[in-house]
Image (cartoon, rainbow, N blue to C red; front, side, top):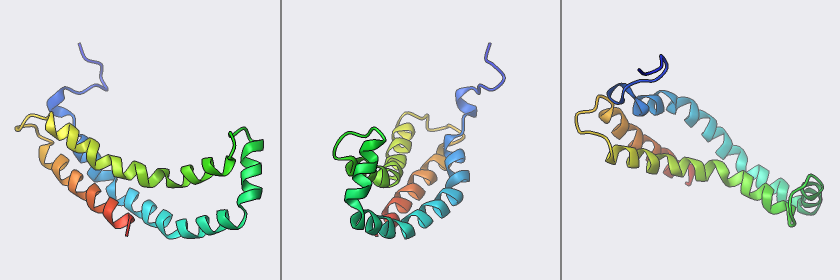
Length: 118
């Protein structure tokens, strides 16, 4: 017997979930994209100081690399969403209730990823 919080496969709606959260994620991501160039500029200006500090916090040398990789993480993560949603779609039955929402979410996140890289 399934637990209360578990849903059967036809009742799972990951496409709907991603579509419902898309406007909030888009707003946050746009803000992040607007501030990213300034963060890069600050890192460039203070890379030695920041690198030393990152290493003192336990990051391996060069510590600045960890910081730079962390700043690019949101871009890489956004890129993955449409790919992962496409993979789910490939394994979803044609008649699944969420198929349309899943297809729309794939397109939405592809567009959001492209717009973030412009």
